[in-house]
Length: 191
Image (cartoon, rainbow, N blue to C red; front, top):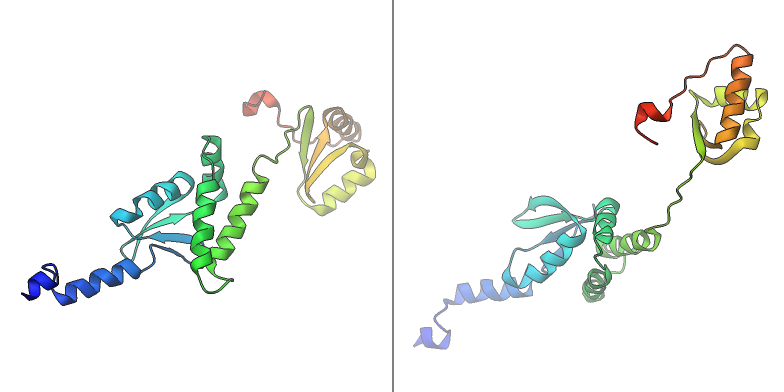
């Protein structure tokens, strides 16, 4: 009779099943990794996450994924639309009680990555100069027209210069008896 009342499930088993149904399907760690339970009802979530994240193994019996700019860019490059992922993460975030959770941080970071996707500049007709240290850069600036030729400063020792400006600087250095190390296009496969 008890079997009929409990649908053939022992009371302990029923409690475990109910606890599993209440347990969150997705957890976000402080490291930004996503942990997803491998359950039948999780498969749509897993497929969605796998479209945008790197597989990071299994932790505590749950699938582990890592959202990274590279994996996101790769997915966007394949034509994937992140709207559903954002919608799902926002829904889960809304269900959480605290606003500074790892999920909130991950969501903000993900939105930032999506907003900046495609904002890259490709320069043509330019050269790159890299020097050993700041002292060499100061000396180069003092003895040549380096400052006038800068298109973009990447770091204090790495700069993008106009191609013609770079040629002038190399000629100036050679006239002074200095011989800069030059990497030509043909040697590095860039044409």
